[in-house]
Image (cartoon, rainbow, N blue to C red; front, top):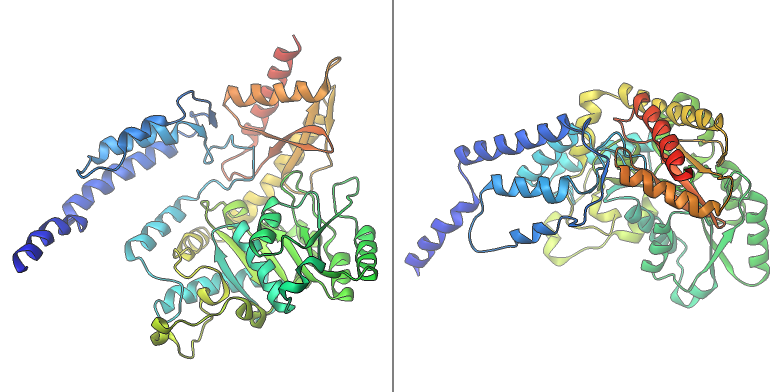
Amino acid sequence: MIDKIKALEKTSRLLDPLQKQRDQWNSQVLQYSNRFINELNTTKAFVNSNDNGKDIYDLDITEEATDLSILLNSISTNIDNVGLNPASSGHMGYIPGGGLYPSALGDYIAAVSNRYAGVFYAAPGAVRLENMLLRWMCRLMGYPETSIGNLTSGGSIANLVAIVTARESFDIKARDFDKLVIYLSGQAHHSIQKAIKIAGLSEAHLRYIPLDDALKLSVIDLEKAIIEDKKNGLIPFFINTSFGTTNSGAIDPLEPIANIAQKHNLWFHVDAAYGGFFKLVPEMKSKFKGIEKADSITLDPHKTLFLPFGTGTILIKSKEKALKAHHFLADYMQDAVHADEEVSPADVSPELTKHFRGLRLWLPLKLFGLKPFRASLEEKLLLTRYFYKEIKQLDAYELGPKPELSVAMFRYIPKSGDVNAFNKKLIEAIQNDGRLFLSSTTINDVFWIRVAVVIFRTHLEDIDLLLKIIKEKVDELSS
C-alpha cells in the first residue's frame, strides 16, 4: 500500500506546480489579458459567427495535459471573439458593468487563498471585510446600523432572498399561499417572477399594477388594488418596486408606495439592481427619497459599480428577520458555533459554500476611491441625455420617456410600411455591423430600440459613433 501511495503522490503533486511553472503561466495569462484590454478600442462590441465557438469542443476533457498556449488560443478564438463583448465601450445593449481590472486581481487573490467566507469562524477577516462593505451600502441607502446584507451572485438571488425573508417574516403557511397577493408592475425584472416560483409562491396572485405615461407604477391604482383585495378576503403581502427598470430605466415613486406599504402592513421591496448606485451622484439624491423605508433593497455592483458579473447584493433592514429566514445549524458545524462578533453570510442567505466576493469589490473601491465612480456614473447620465437630445432633433424618430437614468428608447418612423418591422431590421443592421451593440424591447406591442449607457469605458466619442451608425443604417434600409 505504501508503494502505491507514493506512486500516486508523485502524480498528485502535479496539482501543486512549483514557482517556475506558475511564473510561466502567469506571464502567458497576463500577456493575454493585457492584449485583450489594449485591443478593446479596435475590436467589435458584437461578432455574429456561424460557428459560434463550436471548436471549443475540440478541447474536451482528457487524461493528458494540454499546453496553456493552445488553451489561450482557443479561448481567444472561440470565446473572446464571438458574440457579445461585455468589456467593450460599444456595449450599450443590456445593463452590463464592464469588469474593473482590480476586481480580477481581487478574484485572483481570493481564488489562490481560497478563504471560506461563509462563516465567521472559518475566515473572520473575510467576513468582516464583506460585512464592512455591506454596512457601507446600508449607509448609502439610509438604512440603520442594525441592518444586514449579503453579497450574492446577482440580482436574481438577491430578489429571492428578499421574497423568502418576507414570507418567513409574516409567518405565512402553505395553506394561505393561494390567498397571498404580490403587487408589481409589468416592467418588473423577470427575476422577481422567477423568485416567487422558487420560493414556493406560484399559487399567489400576481397583481400587475397599471403604469403612468412614464412607465412608472401607479400609486393610486396600487392602493385601490390592495383595498379591493382585502375586501375579497385575500392577503396583500409584498410590493415590488423598481429603481431603474431594465426596459426604460424608470424609477417608481418610492415614498408614496412606502407609505402605502406601512399603512396596510405589506413588505416593501425595492429592486435597485440597476439604479441603486446612482445614489453616489449628488443630483440624484431626491429621486431616492423613500428608499430608506424599504424592508429590503437589491443592488448589483456588477452593474453600476462596473464589477465583473456575479456580484449582487441584498440589503435587509431587519437583521432578526433575515436570520429567521435563513439561519440553520448542522452537527458537523458545531465547532463553528460560538458568539460571533459578526453575522456570518451563510446565516442570511441560501448559500453555504460561497466565493469570497468581497475582495473584487473592496480592492477597486480602495485603489480608486469613490471619486472616479461618482464621476463615471454622472458621465453616463449626461451621455444618455446628450444622446436623447441629439436624436430628438432628427426627423422621423419617436422617443420613449425622458431618461431618468442611463437608458433611452427610440424608434424610427418610416414614411411607409410597418414601423415595428422596420425597427427590427434596424436593430439587426446595427448588431450585424458589430461596432456597437444595442438591444430591443417591446412595450404594449410597440417595438423599441434601447440604448443603455453603463460601461465605464463608454465616453462621448462612442455616443457620437452611435448616432452616426444609426443614421447610416436608417439611410441604407430606407433606400
